[in-house]
Image (cartoon, rainbow over all chains, first blue to last red; front, side, top):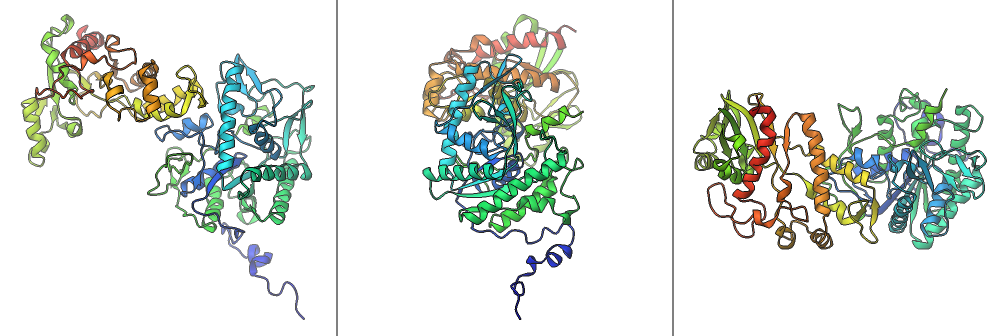
Length: 367
Length: 265
């Protein structure tokens, strides 16, 4: 008598695939649904962890779009301090699918965020990306002018992309009560003032996250029907929660929702790939080895393991990281890689493994 | 009598020729000059105690040794009585920020219709970043004496018009011609190097303001009649090297800069 399980590969069984797998063996967790062509133009966006994704792709020689490019003579540290070289345009971290959808709508003139300018100490910040100008700008008009040109870059980046890699980060966010505008950081964290009458905590559920991403996909396809997507879930736990629950419980909720949505998208749409960075990093097989001592930040080894699995499965070359002795950060370089003209940045100059993550600022509020 | 050593590339020529007419505060200073074309200058070093030059290459690099003889009448300079070293010719790498100016409107620097906006703070920070990774002070293993850096003169203003390679982007070249964008950018770099000079313990001798044209480059009058290290005339299309009048102004600035470390003591 046959069983539907009798012909399955060993990777389908926990004992063989996990229980008997040696610690830190990443296993056979990922088999691509589709291959990303070598010449595909790739746009990246998402939460802090997405910076690792973009950097690894660039270092592997992928054609990662950078519409707000800087010359190689400028160091990564300085570029990234001002939001350059992080993503395909200078939008900073996009933690939620609502923020992603909102940005795309705004780029096409279909949405205007409420309270677009935040003030702090006489300087002015773009409320949708407050971290990209650490010292702020000199006037609200300057913020609007900068945002207008940035939105042109957003359009160009998404329209040029053959593949969009998006890292789902959070479900928790802050919403403008009257309009539904959401922000990447709570008002009052980097700039602006928190007014409980104006802003409310929002914790998205499965249907909201799903609907937002599906709407984003449809909007992208309206301009470029062939665009494919790679989605992944950031393994980085929440720095803080405003949900009232324990941060570990809140993290579990958030990641579960995001993982469920990714599962749905993967099964429902042939043009959406899921890459299991969340599983690779959080697997019990690793015994926490892929996290730093704070049990939150993903270690260089963890990033390298996850990204090497993705790159090798996708046929990109994988180079061992060079450990930078002084900083303790690691980077890899792709020999022979040259920076092409135009909008794609495959520069091998991305040396810093640090990520720019404004969510971590919430830690300063811990008692 | 105080001895100072000038070490530099072809840009040392204008200073060397101006030395005999040096300003009054430098009258009691004697100078030694050691120059080589830029591509060979890094070969010169303190290869034995209190000696700087290319003597160590006499047997192996005949061409350099011959060149040093022609230019300097010697292979090496004795450093026994040297009270200061003045490095002439390090390049302020302004051109490395040109790609930013081609692509972006920069607050307070230039407005370009339709271009992406960059904040003044970001731009300054990027210029600083370039300055930090392109230090002006050459390596030195000789005596621990005050060191000064005289940067390479900015190109003459004619370079914008007549030297397409200086600014390859045509639109940017047009903006440079009709504005003081370059002047502002050079000022940012000079400020950045001023800060670095304090950290790295050297004195930056900035190019004299009176040599600048409206564009921020060197007034063309200073490139007329410039000569090479061997006394040969530079070609008319040489927009890099300056003449003896320029050298005199450098010496005026040097007299001010040397006042404290040397002359006054």
